[in-house]
Length: 278
Image (cartoon, rainbow, N blue to C red):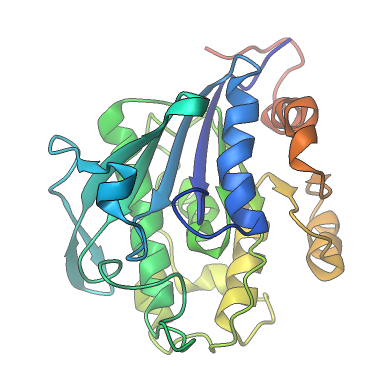
């Protein structure tokens, strides 16, 4: 029996909007495979500066744009854009903001230098998606977060948004980032994370000094299940030590045969056997 009927994808990358990587392939083909198994989906990604808006026919959704999101005591306007992948019958929502995304790459600039506000970008992205879902009045059964840009979402779902009607009954799957970045955790991380009852205390005990490894562990800690793109023994051992169910790396051709069942299993954690979705 289908249990997780509505799946929200919050991905870092997706082809054809950005260059092809393992994460970009998952961001593109996993939602399609899930939709083809008769699940309802929504997909979000950042509107990176490298995305050609005209070629990909992006346009702003005025009714969803316009709110300000405060990250570390600074207001940042949220802009929502959409585009379609016609062949897959998928609509993609893009989170945009002039400070964080316009004219800027994914994690690094054209010279390979890491941006010093990547943590702020991730916090803005996470909250931007969740606020947009609230505006859409849509309640996902599973939220699948893919990559470090989505790593604050599991924490916020379990803390700041735990009592929001859109998220009260959902479970979270997290896929750790495969992108290799080496910047340290910023000194203002406490202000970046802080929102409602989400605080820097969430990072205690993670044992990481670099930003991306810390974000991968943070997402793993607060998610209900973990789906790997590539083998990561350290994170797998960490997840299994916390009792998290794990989906090991599989080819994109196998997504449809495996992930919907995994979502159902994760959704069922802590629920009576006879409970069904709304």
